[in-house]
Figure 1 (cartoon, rainbow, N blue to C red):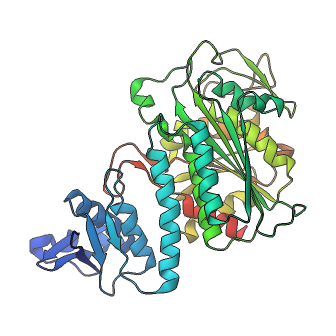
Figure 2: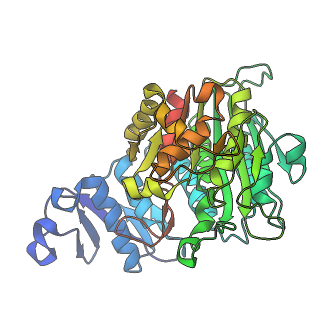
Figure 3: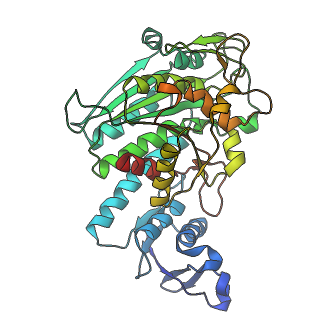
Length: 430
């Protein structure tokens, strides 16, 4: 068994030989010290950067030691120490039972999100995604969780035309997971919150095909479904006592003789018709079904999450998740949840005027905005048309910070799990 390296954290500078004020790590015969000075980003950033640095050196086993670690610093270290290609071992370095319980719950949820997001598109089909999400949540609360999976042509029978349209081009059938977490067991209990996640397990762009450079990371286009599942899992582990319904809208967006085409019109069961002007704007088409189903439950809140637009990443980069809502209160709840959990989120604009920027000559709306319109805002405006009262008590997360195409000084390449804690906190506090 590999002996774990002992790693301490201090807020004093390293000796000059290790870089002085800007030195992140120093080493002795017995282990390493993280120097969490302002010059290296402060304690949380320093912990995560140091973990990435140690992983890069081939250190596969670490034990956190000394008095410099609190729970948030330990968690930041884990976030950086995760490696998608090997199973690094981390001793949290605490005997506090409450801390260990919370850290274990975070790790279970975040690891699941990161690993399923990193899974190959061949391994993670729409049905596999739905089944694994249901299995995770059922394992956590077997008496409180029930679910059903609607697949293939059965989607049409229940009126879920968006998921079916996007997924019909693949030989692997599209599915919707409908999961009910009902800790009280009363079937007549009102639904507190509905969650709706985009689960595009691979996105070629369809006939609006992506270039190879843009398609290479599209196994991650199910990040919204993964993130909501992980967030609900963490909230359940923390003792959530609210009734939550989860809708995962899962499909592959591929090209074939059965694939949907530009110019097609989709008639949704809430009466809204949509002209397809870009088959690479497919996420909003599947989410529409989930939002209709969620609205029918009349919950207090609806939250959807999706890796929806490149425009959001252009606006805030990959360090923040984007938040959009027509109501200040709804948006602020998510922003407050992110702040409470030391995750980054930023509000982008969404106003009634954006509802007018997705016109169609042949249907009520188009699935892309008019030339020059803001892409993240018009995508959210599209979604608002499928929420009760055009967006009441609803908030949309565009997960610009959920995936890292290549590693950097904070994150390994792949899924990050950044947003799981925000969603869990939203469920707890809303």
